Image (cartoon, rainbow, N blue to C red; front, top):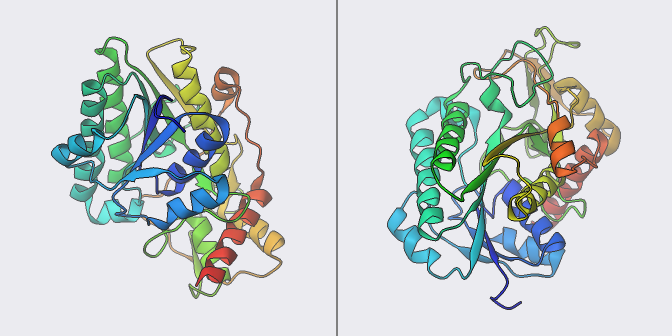
Amino acid sequence: MSNQNPTIIVTGGAGYIGSHTIIELLKQTDYNIVSIDNYSNSTSKTFERIQAITGREVKNLNVDICNLEALELAIEQVKNPIGIIHFAAFKSVPQSVADPLLYYHNNIASLVNILKISKALEISNFIFSSSCSVYGNVESLPVTEQTPFSKAESPYAHTKQMGEEIVENYTKFSSGFNSVLLRYFNPVGAHPTGFNGELPRNRPDNLVPYITQTAAGILQQLTVFGDDYNTRDGSCIRDYIHVSDIADAHVKALNYLIENKQKAQNTIFNLGTGEGVSVLEAIRSFEKVAQQKLNYKIGPRRAGDVISIYANNDLVKRELNWEPKYNLDDMMLSAWKWQMHLKEEQ
């Protein structure tokens, strides 16, 4: 593809949601895609997986976004950039509780630096990867984009609240700059081919990789953190959403900005299915599609966990004409296919 085509920069392109978004961008658009990822929580093999699925090679700049000088140097290679999708961030709640300063430094410095780059290169379309964790423990469900923030339950969630504020303020005072904040609920699953999915470097903190690794015998047992919450079965409730649905929303959000369809300089969308699923319901769905019993136990509650949260997704459906395609069983089956694929690779 010629370099005359506009370029979209994807930070954290080797990561879980970044890589699936690149796949959708390659499938749905003609843009050149350049990733920036220093593999701090990912692997270069992701780009081989992207190529296997799309037939397209993606250039990655192996640079730490927290290092502005290195970033400025690397970005000189990028021709005709018109948009940035910023995923690169640390995202483990327990790790952020254990090491808050690591999270504040990495997640905030990287955001400030990529905004500096967007200013220097006059890139006017910016998408920020946010999280439903910004809402904290909410008083009423489902959560709309207008739901006020409660106190952040973890340093990770706080970095997302701060990040949103930084993007909003920068957008407000920057002529011609437009941004979308996408608040993901709980991204799960893998590409339907089973060739790309979530690949935690260390012991997973998220439920679904923990389920699949337990089922595959990599982990001995899954612990459900609490069954005494005020929910229908006592376990926490989340809005699980397929990663490919989230990726599709990023493509639609990008086009929304590039085609000047936004009604305001800064727009916020919730990305969820709109349905709450309990931890125990997610386990039962997995057991059904994998046709095996999962070895799990009930443990104590975990610090930083929100009791119950799910989205009202009316706004994103209306504005971006977006609709989630995958149900809970699809999510679990694709995650299991990915786990089986990883086993074959070894």
